[in-house]
Length: 293
Image 1 (cartoon, rainbow, N blue to C red):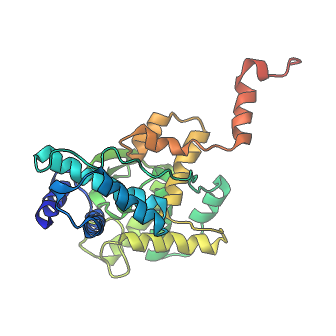
Image 2: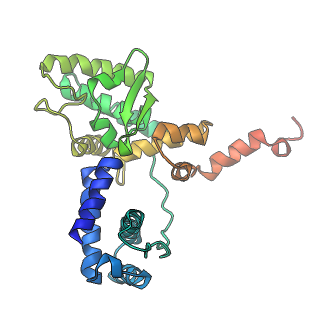
Image 3: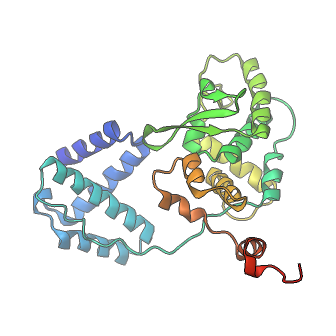
């Protein structure tokens, strides 16, 4: 069984460009599944998979976790079936647990402006932190995309950044004027460090800033401005998409900017509040306008 799992993970790493973190999660999920079924891959059927899903739910695990593990099993057997190792995919017809609809958290325009202005003072760290916050909101980058940026990925003259997203897919994303100004200021401070590093954002030691480091920076300034609830880099990504949508941007344009492979993934951002929707309706619909106008 280990041989099958190794081949599957090697395929994901080489052909799909899956991250080390995701590969680790896949290996853990498959290990738990085979520990439960205690059977060879060739002998597993739909009942085995459904039993595993039921056992996970009965154990009190979140439906999102169970759904992710089922997706891992489904992908694994899809790979084995395509390669001819098994006759069918036993997980194909197992229904995914219905997940509660949770709207992504996003900030108001005023809150975003307060957040990006929180890093105060002069020097390397305040300049870096302002540039990070501005760029996250300006371009809607994932935290891994931002931490993975190199100096030559950025074209400040044109206001563009080359981003490597999921599956190592590259896309070009615009960078707003405020973010460009913040990055220019940061680059001056960065040069003074005299570190021969290609990474765009550096830590105190002069090496590449990690995903965790970026999260700590966002959380630090969110707490400083008194925002309640969990705020992180992904909140700024949600905010970026929501504000574009509220200002009339096409959903497919937002899909391209975010680097989503499927439009259905982008559609979760269509959670505009009813007041905003009614305001648009009143202004746009012919029968909603005041007859005295």
